[in-house]
Length: 290
Image (cartoon, rainbow, N blue to C red; front, side, top):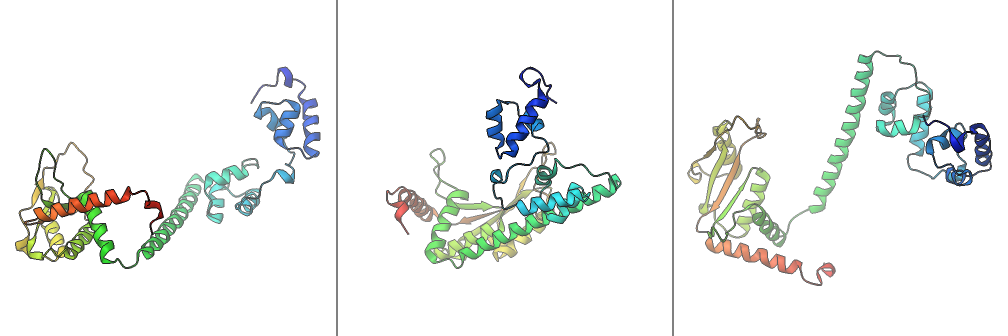
């Protein structure tokens, strides 16, 4: 606590003046400037117990929750119990009721811990429900893709994840590798749109040697609906025990490489399409397009 010395030595006299100004309807800032109190701790002590005038209270969407939280606190409820009751974060509850007396402990630490876990579980459930609603609404915004929309999506998808010719490695090969089955599904739909026949596709699984290799091979074969003859030799990655590999568990199936045979001409077209998108995005009238 700040020691009262110097210009605040006559604390009681200063408090009387501060309370009088407060009851006249002045705000904290006005009182601070009028009394030249530049220490917030001293100002808090001068105004302790004096409610703020109504005009200084800004309306807030959480006002009702705040008042309810204060009522529950005065009834002796803990932060955890208020959180369960109102669904607010404990940090907000703390801000709203920290000036009220702390209730006496009526539960064991184990009981309090169980209440806290239940409150946090309810909070996490509400957050997850909100996330799912947001994702569902976003999914519905897409609807059906036109051929042109799929065409443009596929170009961006390939240029992000597909193999590209480099000055130090000038090979024009259409290779796409990814661990996300849904990415593979969209990519194959794009190739079909471009007229790439299934007999031009070759697949290779790439996976850590410590994983379920046969299971991953079966998974990818079922996913793409290709015959075993369309799959080349699986690439096994050496497992380094000194590093912690996060790609583990039942859901880990490695990556699938999709290669288009005789794809040099297609690669050149993909590169051209991509640069066409880049040039179009830099057109001066881009913001006015519909």
